[in-house]
Length: 307
Image (tube, rainbow, N blue to C red; front, side, top):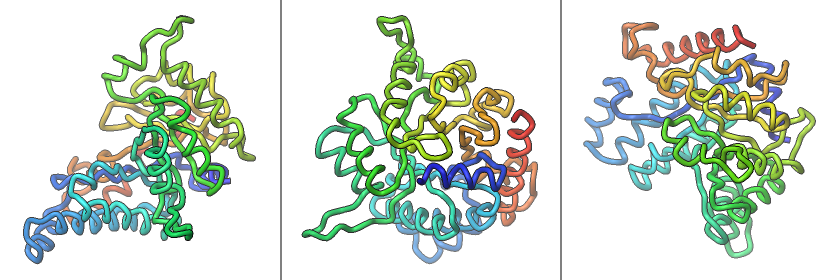
């Protein structure tokens, strides 16, 4: 099962880390931008090619020390079909390097819309009787706040095609409390109720590792809530944003680990991909991918200190 393979890869690398590939033009070194803009002008296609060149070099320098990457689709979709093609090319290239890919798409809709989202991102497309697989991610993130019927199409594709989900439960942004912390009739916060639903949805997708292919997004910036959810969801694997640039640290995450099976994968995006801009790892823009590798190793050391 997919989740078992991810856990084994994390154990092999001793790095419960996913690198967020969320490129912004301001984070891409000048030599990459200038070369492509000179040939193609200031166009969406040029930006897509810039982002892919940037992502490719990052991947080439970290694929052997981390198990996964997580492209955030919004950074690509804003540039139209050229940007979306870059997102798909990034998935294909990362998987060619044997990295697991978490597509950060946060889809959430009902009925045929949910079926279409699921088919396009983790399932199959039925084209005149032929089932076609696009360059799909291994896992995707989804928003559960429209209820079980909005989640079921994804669960079906996970079962049919050995894919996985990370469902938003307690997100890392400060404003998450406006909705996710609202008390239910039993006095528990809404995120706790959503966590119970995620555990239930994943009951029939638990692998040999003891974890389900239906995971939860739980932010590093809320360590007390994360600890509470960890105890309540022993068979749920966590995707944890909020490390590094958003303020989370290894110390904040120590409650998430469950022995050598870990139980979570921690995301860092600009803290790794834009590490060269900190001046901590290099003084040269051209060494941006080497700086990314050094940032991964530093993050690994921080996490392992509390495991």
